[in-house]
Image (tube, rainbow, N blue to C red; front, top):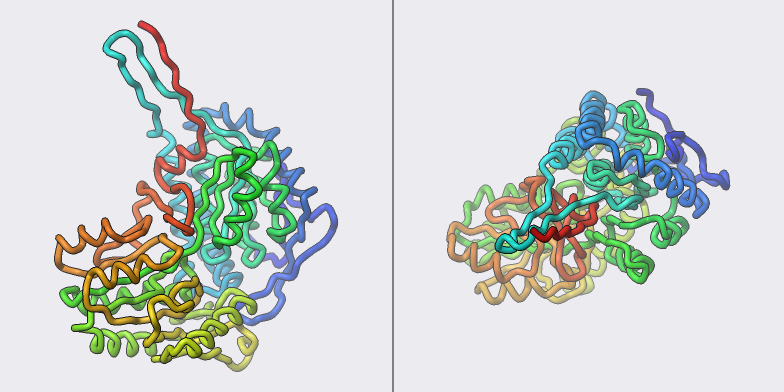
Length: 483
């Protein structure tokens, strides 16, 4: 495979520009420079992609499960074979450290296809015997054309998390990756074609959400929409699609609490908190951006965490020793810096970081900023209530369980959280009390692909992962036979 800087749509098995000929510039966060282009598609391109998917659906839906699985396994194998190239693509396009793309993003993308290639073979319905008078059983069938809309923070990782179960279940897909990070999605289409995926089964439309989203959201042939991204965008999708009774899975924002009790394993809690706050420059919906530490250990914990944050190696994402790369875009960098100013105005004290970073040479216009830790903020201030989605975390002491539960639950979000304690009863107690779709006890980001993934409140609707994903991408029918 050769690297390209010109991205094209993938419709009906062919690569093509937008019908209107318009393009968007693609910027490298690493350098701040334009390094390619992508289609600035319109509703016309969406219409063509949906029609291609609709045409391909009957044959793909009737393809035996074993054959579908073999194609998905071949695609997973190709991702693995091209992993070094794809990792470089992801790092260049997103700004994340190459080491992260190599160890997490690309392996997980491969695992997504492997997992659902297996899972579809184990997916089954239920049966219910009515005391010998009748037998009920359920059938599951693919929906048809489904839309998969993915974000910029984990581009290939989250795109494949949606595409893999949709295809495994027998649907055809129109996918819309983020226009900020389109490159790995483009190369996925090349690999899908090489793997033998029939034309029209997977279609990729690039461009701006506000231009192509309404057509995709409201097209009568699109039966379901799986979306990951901001709460504001998810709300707009729901406004478009819900009145049309489409199935919706919306995984949205988070403002996740990380609660550390005095009886926790201190060093492990510090080390994992460093990762859970600043991995991928804090640009993960699961990051623990609000750190609550029991007052008994607050000062030593804070001191240890500051030392660890300051020791992070920041620089060129393509260098193997880099731990903190670039933020994804200039606009996003400026947004995060505005939140630093807000935190100061709200009385926050910057413990470390807080500034944009400028390097010499090719990186001088890149989108870099110091990982930032802030204290002395009220739990209900805007900095602690709004999703920043960058390398910024707040740290706050607490005294009682009731107090920290109130603070943890105070935001509009409820995606994830972590609890650090050796007290098993406390862990169970808080796990029930926290408003969250996912909770980790004495760890962070341990993921079993069989488990449900999703949030409550403004963090989302529905669940992804395992059988939940396969249920979402299928329709259930009950059959009753009188005996």
